[in-house]
Image: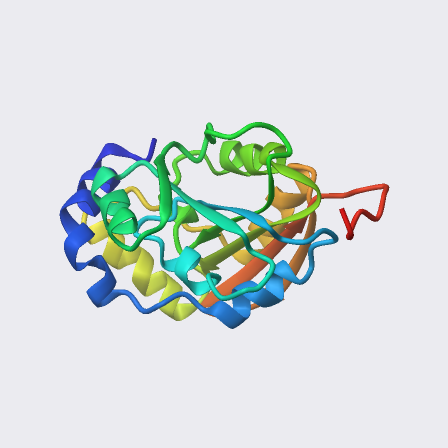
Length: 202
C-alpha cells in the first residue's frame, strides 16, 4: 500500500480533495489512449482516488468501463458517491487478471506509490498486448515540481517524484515501448504494450 502517512492524509482530505484539485485533463488522456493499437474499452484508474481521471474519460465513446483502484477508503467513498466503479487495492498488486484491461492510468499519483517499479510491472501484466499505460506526473526537475516536492515533504508525505527521462527508462525496463506525449511541470508518459498482431478490431 501507499506509505501509511499518505493513506491517512488522503483519508482525512477525501471530503475536500475535489474542491482543491482541478479536474483531470480529458484531452491529454484521450490523446494518450489514441496511441493504443486496440480499442480502449476497459480501463484501470490506478491510485485513482476520488475518480478524477475516470470522470475525465467518461465521454470517450470507446470506453465501456473504468475502475478506480486505490488504497484509501475515504477517497474510494468519494468515487462511489460519484457513481464510479471502484475497488480497494494496491498499485503493486492490482486486483485484476493478466491481460484484463486495454489501458491503465496513474494521474498525478505515481509519486505516492512506494515501489514504482512494482507498480509498472503490475500495469504491464494487467494490460493486454496493444494497450497502453498512461502516466501523468509532476517533474521534480521543473521549478514548480521542486516546490511541490518540498511542500509535500513539509506535510509529512512520503512522496517520491520521478523526472520524465527516468520514468521513460523505467517504462522501457518494464517491457513497455515508452513515448513522451507532453512535457513541462506536468508531463505525460505513455507506455505501449508491444504486440505482434494488429488486433485493432478485436
